[in-house]
Image (cartoon, rainbow, N blue to C red; front, side):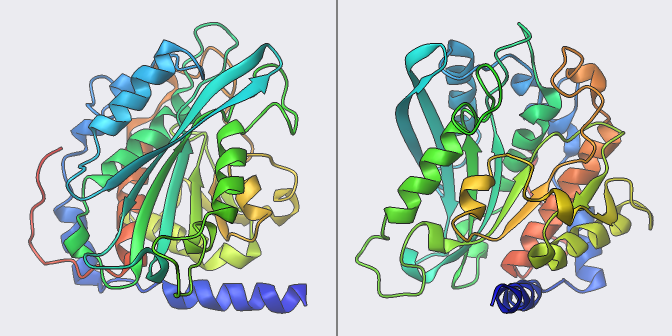
Length: 337
């Protein structure tokens, strides 16, 4: 039975993804907004994120406000999942997940299946002053870059895009099931029980069932990051990313190695885990092994590679357009970010 479910999931994902024609891909890449917004030194989407942002502190609040300010609310619906939970050092810390949803015009929520791009915006409490440029300033900046390229009128019926910026991914003391992924554990539990509004009659009855694919980005931005495929059921989506990298990087792969790490899928805790355990298909975009700067003071701007960041932004942008089956207009220049 498990094998049959896996086969069905693979077939469903493969059929959901429809690449653009080569000339459309070339036009899309040629007309991407300036990547200056992702510049390590002064990029408007990345530089503000290269600061400490521990959950429950002013730093995290400031970053939450920054994320909100960079999403166009005339097209995107913004909401917060705000809650208080105990940690090993406090009887109650306020955590805030930020969710941005882009659905087609005149659509009902229960009729829309969504591609979900996600990353966590909090940083570790220790070592003091830890920034976490890869963990996950760069992933958050890339999500913002993708978001600013799309509007509701570009989406075909039945397909939507959602961004989730998780709070509380990092452990306060030591990683355990209780001291980690506070935000994603809370949101997955809420969405499993939260029915769409109005009273749903479509296929996507709960918020969780509306997630066609969860793409979680983490630990990205260094030149030593090699990302394998972790789940057989989402192998077609991983293969699409690897194919797109060859397109944007002259026929070579630096990030998406083509290897698989199916053996590690069940042992690596991250924000995808609560959703995976509830049946959501997951594409985990994280290097293995982890970058050499992982959880050290060296995970800062100096650890980042501009070429890798730019390639990731191009790959994720084109993957999103193709997954959503957006008809990309040739020679359409988007606004500078």
